[in-house]
Length: 69
Image (cartoon, rainbow, N blue to C red; front, side, top):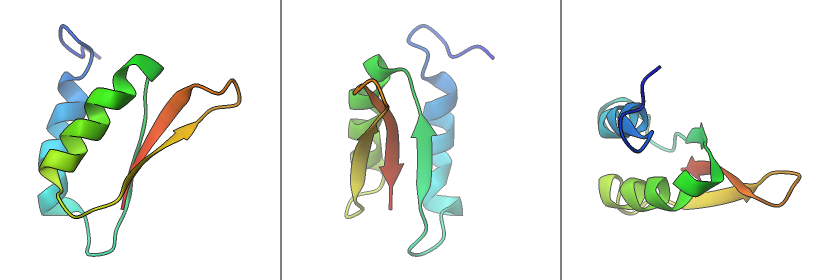
């Protein structure tokens, strides 16, 4: 997989489709490199306003997962 220059090209494509495919009261989750969670969180908040976006830390305490619901 080629994520582009910043590694988020595929994630951006998935997020762009969420308004169309995410069911009412549905949820989506992303497992990411910790350096990418802030950018993905911001993109989800812009793409899906009014949803809850949260970060879950892994066992090492690093922000690893972003969940939108």
